Length: 398
Ligand code: AMP
Image (cartoon, rainbow, N blue to C red; front, top):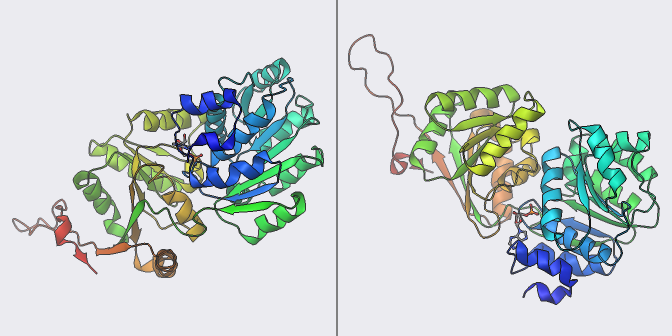
């Protein structure tokens, strides 16, 4: 099966070739035909499945015949990183279409955004807050909108964007095509879909389980041993880019610093950074100068770095939906990945949920009891030496 099956406009196909896509991914196979036919669509797919191209290609195909300088497609994204990434995919796939696109998000220069809008743009990818600023200012006109995409809808609602989305919807024509993508389908998303969509087609990829290309390991560990375990893993496992998740901004900052102190190319991505620092951290991680990124869930949303070989849950995620999102960062198209999750006695309930999730998806996983080996004191008074690595085979597999 190749992209010819979709009969996309030749200008759009040029973009597909330029990005080197040869075979459509399952979400693309399922979603592109109904979107081209004009149906509303709910796409249940996590990041890493090729979902962006699944909606971008039909949008380009639809708009290419008559670009006219007005905003005709709008993609709502929860974070600026995701908005930028989506805009980059549009630029790549749309490079021979003559269509113009831009990303709109807070923290960037408003005047520059207004100028770009004035020059004429057909496809806008926006974060809800800044888009509303433009709507209130009258600097964006959405009265010609034909296609609306709500991307990562579950994240969007988690982040409290529902009122903003509702306000944006008030400014849109009723007659439009609406596409909603989400990794999970909690009741609030189902309700939103019922309210705003017309007879949507639903397509589903790996509904509630984790990517098949990822292997999972659960480490039972004491809270105080987590950092040594992390250092051991980084030292003795063959990794490319590694994404480490922590529960709080402070922990992300602290752990990144501890890793840096051992000479590891690590940095943190968390809410205490300003826009410039976030961008630097992301750029470093994308170009490989930063090998280990320690992040909170919110900061890591939308990260799309193909070289991520390992996702390490230093702290257990708050829900299984978060687990699916975190793990979705590795094992992306054509790659394999590993997920390591540190669990302490306090995480018992969440650990049960995780095992249930993995069992349900018939996903194989290992459980490892981490025992930090402490060298015998050499002489009296030395209580504890630097922890020594326990070779993998010495970890007892339960
Ligand atoms: P997404 O799920 O949209 O974040 O896409 C994940 C990654 O897969 C991105 O780096 C895309 O450029 C890439 N991708 C999307 N579709 C294809 C395809 N058909 N073949 C190869 N790579 C793809």
